[in-house]
Image (cartoon, rainbow, N blue to C red; front, side, top):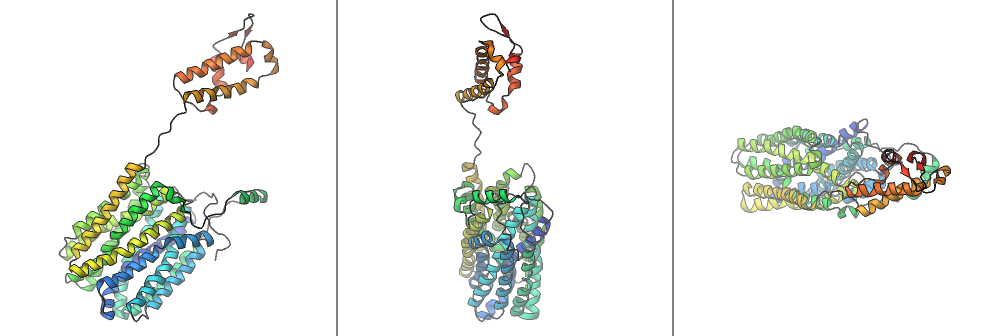
Length: 507
């Protein structure tokens, strides 16, 4: 199962940016699709579950919330990945994901759905989602924004397929048969896990290997030092606020359309439209984020994407008919795709490859708490007001607030410190010491010239003082014999006894 090679990620292997990485990208594409599309696709069955168990919208919304929250159960995945590697963790996760949906098909109460679909399937998808992102980060460096965009496109592709498929399965086999078939489909996660081949360092001699093992500290199962990074803290707070409202519209848009009097198939088509637009938005945004002048400012592009998404929610809350909802889904698909393509790219850029496995686990844990509150809270508002406008207004305000926190805090607290030159006195001392070392290495026959050493010292000191007066700071390594020779060739040092000494001979 690949347990012989634990892919700790700190072997110093350069990311190939291709090769087997494209197979890893395909596996990440499928896993991302299952992880993000399943909570939305399950919403197709909500109406039948409400009739079956006699519950309200807020009760069924807990299914998607628990599923998303468990998928974002990051620290457990980080510890398992750092201990056993990505491949075995993902293959075991595929079995859990399938088992949860199969058990859900035999449920007799909504609590059983929470435990099977929410907890067990969510845990299985979590053990696939996070390791696939870690492997993608290790296989791509220069092409990472594009790779993230392509992998994130798995979510809308799966949504376009799973949402109509769920509707068809519900008509033909009921929600129980639909859950059973979806459980079989999730077994493909095991095949994707098999693609996650760990990167191997080049072979070294046994002596070098032993020295590295002794000097190398043991890898931490969970590295909490990322909290010392101000950029990581800002990103975590903004991400937690963002997910409070980010997943609410896709969960409720189908029910919103049904409430307006549209047919079930026509209502489910909205998720397909949203996913179809999302397919093209994510790779396109990945290409844009990879441009040289955009990549250093990726945080602000991410902030713009969130503002775009939140504004779409605010305007979409005014929709009163099916065409309005179609327009909403088009713009929501574009903005949602931009957010999906950039959220983990920005995190990778902040913490780097070595700490990414721990960082993503901690971020997902914070997001899990927010996800657990977001959709059920929106369901409570819907049950109390019977008006979808307030649900979309709340979601839009939360996403816009997250964008403002990220952008403003980055402008205020994340600044590049300019490289300050060393003080002139220290620089003069460094120059003098470097050149004095060269002076001490003179041939013995040149030391017989008596006062020649004093003349050379005076020339070197004069040169150092001139450089300090001009305030030109240079590295000591850049001052070599050539610079001394160029200046001294135009001068000849005359000793008190009248002997003329050529500087070249003393060097």
